[in-house]
Length: 314
Image 1 (cartoon, rainbow, N blue to C red):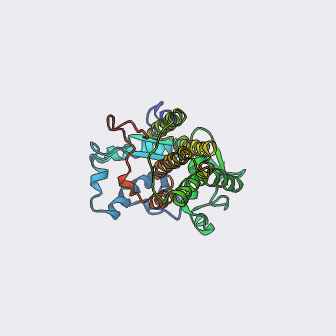
Image 2 (image 1 turned 45 degrees about the vertical axis):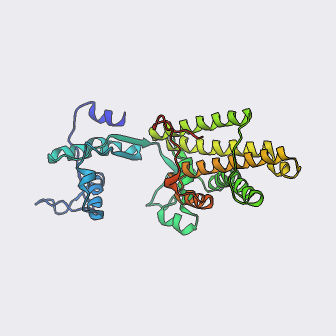
Image 3 (image 1 turned 120 degrees about the horizontal axis):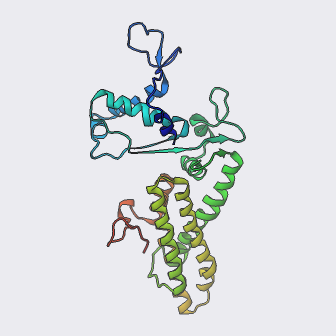
């Protein structure tokens, strides 16, 4: 809608320079005192940065038939990336890779105010680093509060609350209980999973979460996708709490021991699934969990053998 408003009345002349002391100088006689407007200049930097990183940069930027190009930004940058930048690319006459999907968000505010570098309002990259809070927690919280459909706010109190309630009490608690119980009672070995009708119901619920997770990521709805991960760990916690394997192993009844082993092994498998699903959001945490499971990421496959596009947990 934002881009359409720029195109609705036909393309209009737009100034691409500014009278500022900082910026990229305009290499044109008579314009020595001017610099390029930052959002005319910045998208061109995407290509130059890639070219500085690798001499194979054209495999990305001049390969429109084989590269699918996504852009993520706040809504105020949409016109520059959907109209001005593509027009610049077309104007060169070169076969540039052009944006296929442009995903914009609403605004992320800071507490009860707007982010502002000039006024020192907000938390920025160096601030985040100096807190000592692991990068994965920042990634988690920024995705969890991503303003996909409406403005949202970064709040320190909420960051701590979400970390404690979701990462620790939900996901962390489930994985820790499953793997510790496996280590303490079954020598860190995963046993045969014997699914009861109740277990099969849970499996259906988990598969539904996985399908939604994939569908949401395909639509670039990261906030809603990450919520599916915590729904799965919540199901795992409910299974552990309902079956109470810590009680079953103490009864000295063979059937109870077998059931406890099956439940815990199922929970360990769910933990493996979670390690894969959190990888795009929390890569470091994912790797720690996979190391604990002694499973390389590339060895984990949650694809359906009959339909590679359909992700299933088995």
